[in-house]
Image (tube, rainbow, N blue to C red; front, top):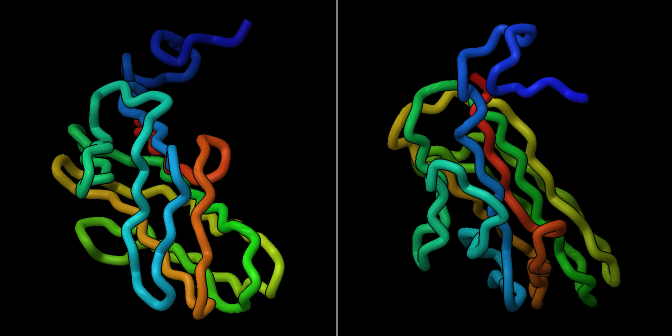
Length: 157
């Protein structure tokens, strides 16, 4: 049996250190960012959000922590197969400023995944968003689904 991280004295963590956590993902139709334009990724569904810190409201699609601390942030975008070649990029933004970045060249006829994993110190009311850009000159879509295009954030303590 694994220890309960909320109460285990062996882990030397304050009670409920991990209560701030969420997993949001792209649901429904695939998102189609225009070529060459930075576009906010519309994570419009959640698997969990214990403190209601992630907004799936239209126009928001962001995480706003309620407590200061270090947060593990993992984000992934899975691009569809398309008949065009070019760059695909994602940018994690904190308060509108680029914090982490991932870029790939995707060849004609292939799908590809952009990923970011980082630990950042956040304060209450910081705003976390994920942005993407595809520079293929054509249509390249973000595949929907909890396992394909998502962001998960957890306070570490």
